[in-house]
Length: 133
Image 1 (cartoon, helix red, strand yellow):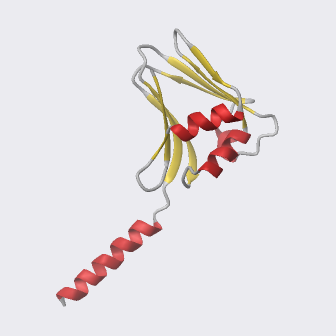
Image 2 (cartoon, rainbow, N blue to C red):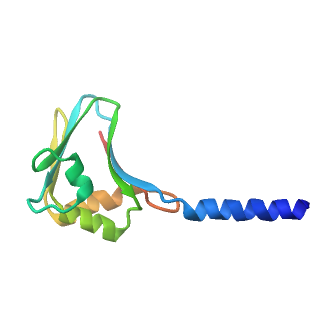
Image 3 (cartoon, rainbow, N blue to C red):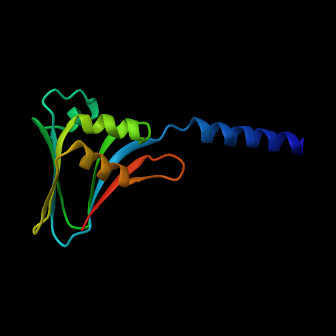
């Protein structure tokens, strides 16, 4: 009877670990000493549903207070290179503005780089965490 309980526990644990579909998102973390603005400019023929849900017109603008986090949800999935490439096809540019500096990622290569370099996860890369200092 004791062995049966162990087998059931192992089967349950394996099922839970393999059937979990993680939610993936992009987090913008304000670690600067003031409020910041993040703007994602979208291409005119954008077909990315998750971006369009958050868009106002042709962009997504996030105002982030000091020591706060804002995120954009992209539903169930993980961030692999293909998924990030598809996302950047829908973006014209990414602008990050602090009180002192404005950084603009214009090219697909630059946007791909900042998103890929900030993808986080142990087994699955489920978050992209961009820290602004």
